[in-house]
Length: 259
Image (cartoon, rainbow, N blue to C red; front, top):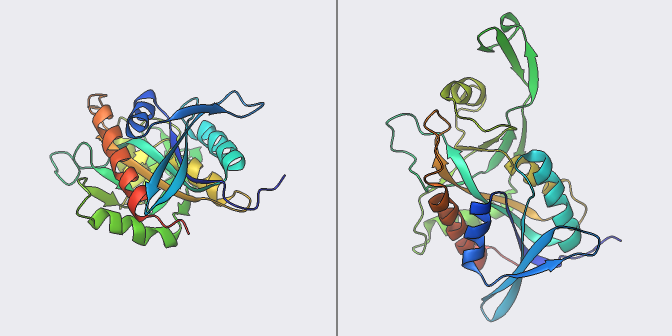
């Protein structure tokens, strides 16, 4: 059956337990299920200007793009959200000893791209090489819909926003990056303005832009918990998850249009 109108206003997607718990902190959620689906969903609502808006939240069962694509596709089909927003943690790209990105800074991409697609070849046949292994990238890009970007910038500039927000490309790959050489050779060499890295955002946006009508508008809101290097740590994950949810909440409660 084709659903011809939006059934839910905002859908939130998380991956880790830390991200899930951060989302659960911000609303009074109730668990629900769909017949024939083992997934547990969380429902809530918020009010704006005397109107009540509906929310759905799901935690994907495992990390990575495959799980993200499957979870987002199912979420979109069952609940038809107007917006699908992935919140949580990501790796920052600040250079060593730089202060342009701090732990807890929010990254809201205008572009998401899959940097891990490509071909492994001899280093003599590739511009990117790691010892005796060469890599020819075949990256793919998706843009966040232009119509939502002004509202994101309004939220960033709002006096209610207490987060430092970076707008720029989000690189997405199939593995956790804890090596600066990967960041410099495989990511910055392809898109030098990349502002963050994660393992799921591209799949969520892909599921949204390729969904049947009515398609949701995808938004990614992730916060810096480490810097994709050998010093990677879990120390700031709770803080980053919290700031991500805090900015997302400001965005969907105060600035995103629903009419």
